Length: 383
Image (spheres, rainbow, N blue to C red):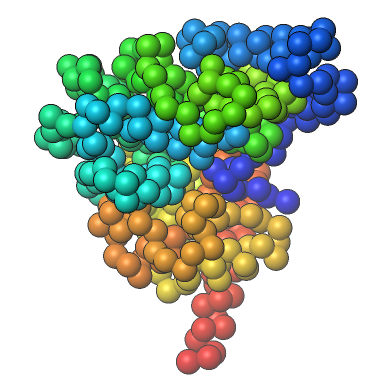
């Protein structure tokens, strides 16, 4: 099997799975219980929070555990919008955000908020100057992803953060789900107030994530209940998921140091080989892109046809975001980059992990050439 759909989800580390099973099997008490057993479970969560804070160079109380990237984005955006609505109801974002951001914006618009959706250039990158021009007296939040989940374009987060530093009343939320462990970020130096991370993108388990909330930022809770997570995110904590998340984050950071260059080499090889194939257009920018995503189209072939052809060989790639892949619509990201609708409808996304090998990349290219040649023959016979 060749698994090239790691932007959708990654295979959990065996150590993360073992930790999850052990914690749920042994430390199953409710961490909110006042007895000593509950206290030991609560201590496990505190230790995990401390480990994650150390890895990210932040304060422990700035770590809010969630169920994943979607909840982190919703909590960051809605929590800020509701808390600071008396300052204004204007929000700035881009046209290429993940559905957990774009659909949250639509919901806020239905509640009376105004949202400015910024264009991106042909590389899928927003211009910081456009962010500055969009700021109004009633702007309370800017939300821009760090790495685009479809084409891998890296947004100028540092420059945008520096710009927003001059506007102390505006919060800066960044969806870092595709960036963490691949693209360096300093939450303090980049002046980021809210940053979303998901465990299952870094070989942790589905159902766990976190939102960095800068000390001093107040969010309205969107889940009310038992006042867990500093009364920002109520609900009995997913202890096994949290502890295994901390372990996965540590292992992922170690792998990043050892394997990032290998991942870049594989991406470069794939880009070069795709460039030799007739009718192939690579949409991921040559410069300023994440090392794990490569998006391309093959003229004349719908993406679903190619994906199913590769599937027969147990080679797994995808079309757009996994959250949008079952919708029969061209990629909004590619359309925003100026790609024609027909070509956008043929987009294929390859996404790597630190566990992929050059041999897998070579096999993938060989099978892709083989299958597209066969499909071409079949199409010629049917004409």
